[in-house]
Image (tube, rainbow, N blue to C red; front, side, top):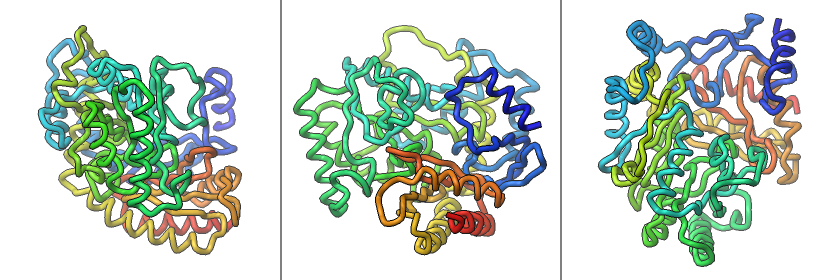
Length: 427
């Protein structure tokens, strides 16, 4: 059955639409932190639909909210008042940390970043954008144009002039040998030098933890130091929280809070986890920035009633059950467990991350050379053992990405670590 579905997939969908595994997997249903495939095999899910299943598969509160809302009305567009949209916007504005916040809903993180770029360039009247090397911001024309990761950049054409800044990757690049303080100072000096050679940019867009890039991050405080330089020049700071938001990093509710010394971002984008699998994205910005557009706009599907009901139920569940705290506790245990495993596996260069956002970087033993074949082998072996994980990385995709639902238990973390340990020892 799966082979027939794969053949049909190949005949009607694009060749560039990536699929995991030599024998692609059809997931048919899920419960909690587990999913099942069409052959009845059960897996512990450590990737959550690319970080979208934030709380749990088939979370009763979310399925109930979706069902009840669908029984009333599913969609009407932003041309009409929408109670679930207003209620979710109020909750998000309250937890955003941005003063006088306004919220605009989209259907994806890509569209959220598109909107943030539109707001920043319109507000600043500049089409120059600063972005981080090794970054990823979506698959639309403008978001591809600012993505600093060749594996996910199919064209060099762009409506924007993009300039790339150092700092998103701590353990690679020309400043990797420096200690944290000197690393930040060097990146700030690089930024200041870059600004001396270009027209005034509209904004810097940055992921606090680079997702597709392999869960890499700078030392705490880098973006706070950047913000001081940017603020002097009126340049906006956009925090791409599509993967880091809602407490996934454990220590903070938003990834930018590790860099909050100089105040919150001007714009925050979000998506993925807030909908727990429903198509929800959005932008939070100060009112003066959000309201800067001088033409009408709507969102046909952004903020539709059924997705807003899901997002509101999901966010309420996350806050009421302190899933951020659970991510901090269980994620900390999982990271330490994996580091103990890594010490015995020559292919593992580094285990890094925060909370339940963990990267295991593989290289060829004794070198810093990426090992994509090894990553593929471990991905397959983990699946055979009953564990689903993701992949990522910069110059080559040799990082295993672990991002289970934030309700992960200690027992499930140990089970997943044991499966991954056996998979790593097959190399």
